[in-house]
Length: 167
Image 1 (cartoon, rainbow, N blue to C red):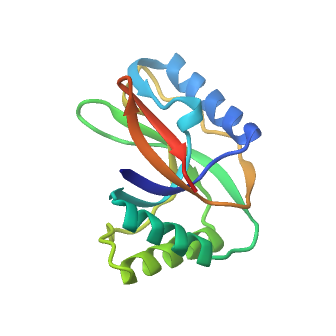
Image 2: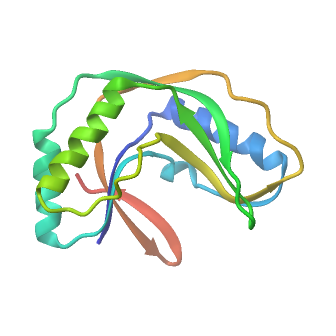
């Protein structure tokens, strides 16, 4: 199964992200917008995992403790692409978030997982393949307290990409 570790959002944060999507959509000629229930912040992408690997991931997650922390969302950005841009919301530099991501990655690598080693840049993808008529305004700063992380299974159900928390 295809897995990743992520931070899911409370209702307030999700509604703020959806409002940003709606504004972006109003300036767009086309694009694929992430469904509200699929909005998340990826900490570690794991890819295809078997049952034994999944149990090891769960164990590592359970062994990784962290204090509650606030995550601040503060900027709207995009990765330019020829076929349409990827729009995202950025997270203010946060040492606790970066430490959590690094700790999980290090433990998973020591357990034999092969992970992408590029620099972690926390962001929430709002939409892909977006062509805009003009750029939306920058977002107002908002926050969420992070108290848990989730192991997410990604699968296609009736042709729709669906994320389910499994741990």
